[in-house]
Length: 160
Image 1: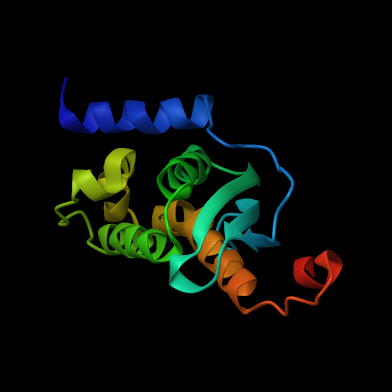
Image 2: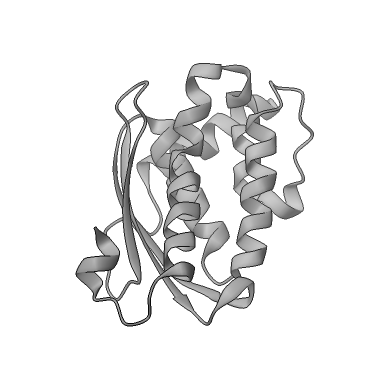
């Protein structure tokens, strides 16, 4: 089996059998992101334990609408982020973003990106890069909001 065909199969498997899909409680912050180019959207929740870069990503849950790439990417992202520290998650997100910006020339580190290496071919298609990055950007946004949230704010204030 060719490498590209194997990568396509990984993406399709995550699309057909998404991991961590469905909004769960408890959570610290919820965000809603839309890709204006194609209309893909994701509502994503983050639950952290601790503060700063050492905070542990306890949970990431999401609900999404859109193409197979955006939905598979959300599934892969949750697998890679849950259980890591925020700093580790940000490094993984940066590695994934660099891969998406590589225009098909990137050499992904499978030890870091695991199933996310399957998106290497997506980087050759500028219109699809935002699809692959949608949930990653939502996670970064929700995590930043959680880390900077007023500890006295109500959940309604954090979600809005």
